[in-house]
Image (cartoon, each protein chain N blue to C red):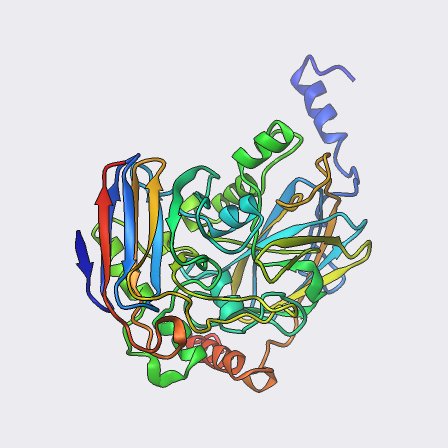
Length: 196
Length: 262
């Protein structure tokens, strides 16, 4: 069991059959997540393949997280929240300048977490793709308007993933302070890896 | 004509020159164009485009589905970020006026024409696995090639690999998202639909023309798309319709100035 501090990255290899449980300790915290085939990181999480295969943009119990080659990486086997986002991507210093203004350029951001944590596994910028945002709430209105709105999570709620192959999981415990993805207040989360 | 000798084989080969078919490039493009090519269903194409180039795609028969990836032509680790493209601009359905954003907070291109109802930022393109399950094969030499396999080939022509293929955005076929997150298939707007993209920096564009992942038709159905490109005036930050778009174009201008490109 590991506590991931507010704003911090985390990573681990999860073996086939093991489960990863993410606990939103204080509630309304976005947990950005990327997943790779641990033996061939050119195969990685694909938001579009996951969305197209399940015919729905939201992730919840039963969602199969698919790779860029269409293979199952992990499956959501339990979810106490109801739905999670995989459309909104990760905050970056660069996108923050568009969303909020140039004054946010030197704030810490999820892409910074992915880059520094990924670098420990030989991954670089080319390896970052659209990701999962556990606990983040991104509705799409009938006219196509979409955006990050107040979360629907609460303290202590969990989501549990089962590895369908050996996977490398990268996490950014989102440091964003300019939108409601984490209530403007980044807080810690807990990771638990267990045998299946 | 006998091809038993080198002379005969050469004559046979050369006699094929000048053949005209529907799906082929016109080289050089001519008539003020910098690119003129018709790509068949199940085909792909790519090109490096100068800043300001306006790329026009025409769905000739109403069954095209063109998935697009864009890269900074000089620094390809900067590339299309579909998530930022919808999130930063607060809009999932992409049409005229929408900027296509890179992962570096800049505009790679502007959509200058196109039906917002007939684009898709959610479903990407097909894989070898999905097409093999769906149509029996998805390899590029098959009759039912998958989009990601064709993107891999197009990327290779520019020194790029599978690692360089992020989610793509597709045009001419639409999906609508319901309140529950589920999709309604809108299909095509019909023959003659046009999409135009204007490069806001030098870009490498990769295009694949394959059936949409949610196309419900049993048969692999995809018809040719005509590509034409011509030089044009790049966008100005003051033309932007949103503060986010204006900042994207300002960031692009800042980058181009530092590179000596504008």
